[in-house]
Length: 313
Length: 300
View (cartoon, rainbow over the protein chains, first blue to last red):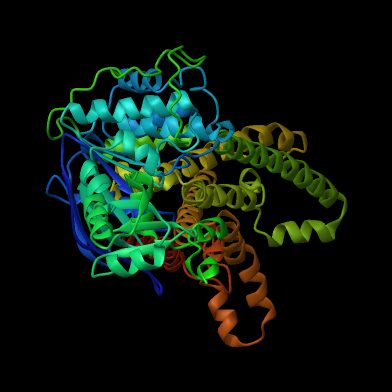
């Protein structure tokens, strides 16, 4: 179990993590989701004791990592695919890591087999592709057969087969009762991997809930309505908690009201509706919704998708 | 990235695709098994040390440079002494040196050994940071100091042993060359042994200073430049700057502590031997303590 309490990291005048509280429970895959620069990696480095929190605490199984008697056997982490000396072979890297905890050579060979690195294990890590680097990072994380596994963007650079492998691996690890904490900026990956989701944006926790709840709860129910009297209908529907968006001449998107309420209001005022479609929010949309105000680096393409000011008037 | 392609065929790299049972994993609660004791971390650091080709190349070049300079110096000394038999002026100069110039032949490459092994000290730590290896190292040893101390032991011990061994090798090569010119070098004489030991300790100290610099600066070029600045530039600069302060300060530079420690008689304008020992010790201990303290404190 990983527990963060008031965890804060400030670099100069930039707050990377702003007093977050969360708990990562054992026995399930907890996704850590957020756009680039949201504070995911910083948080994970603080869990691993590599970055010192400006304030607050983070513990693994009740104690900061530096106080564990056998850290590598308790917590395994893939923090960065490049946390390896480029001139050393993968095998020797793992051997040196294993030596700190008297982990047997047999285990080194096991994790090499497990991650599919057998053929390149004796080669210098500097020549590895991003995907192979990720596999080596995962091998290093599993070396101590740890109860807690932390993986920062593990599917980055992996081929589709590798992505499926990681997905199955983390689910398997969680099914064994381990704590699995997995970060990604890809909502779609989380949707198929995680059981529980912690969403972070600009160093703050935006959501911390089972994945189902995030899909259905946070993403508001929206309804697409076509009518030939949009102005009148908008007037009828307007109220607190209701947002209306006129998308086309006769096309309206309503959120905050369910289809039945919309139909009732239209019927009462004799406004004809010729389409009424409930829109189920995908996780991707829910994520965009959650983080749209929190994105650190808006790309032009992303801002283009929200043409409220630009195209609205 | 959000690919949903499920390829059931095993890849070239092994049949692990979609295999949910990745080897043996016990997965029961908290850790059982040994943690990072100092000896284990030392073993790990030694594995890291010997599995880098660049380390082995630097060690090898130290031996080559030491033996090469020893041989060159033996030859040069022989030529010089031969000339002295015909030239009374040269003979007088040899006499003025007190006749201990032959004994220093095996250690004549020491300035280069110190540069190479000092740089090795810098590189072993700075490369941890430049390659990102430090994240793996300190995730395995989150208390950090054991890893730092273990690396220091590896650096100091190897530097000492390599310097001693290459001094000895240089001696063995020099003896027959000197013999050709009728000069006698006794490698077992107390002065020979003293030179070997003091110079080896000195180079080990330089390597320790290098490692401290590598830890503090975390950048290979910056660390090596600082080392060169301290050992090669500062002595010259201090000599050029006028004023009594710099004449005095120059004695306290780490590079100027060897002469007083090895000389048969006290050399003017240097420290006493015991002072030089203390000064060199301080040059090692203070940067190492500072480096250890900041390594513990700073983010990796």
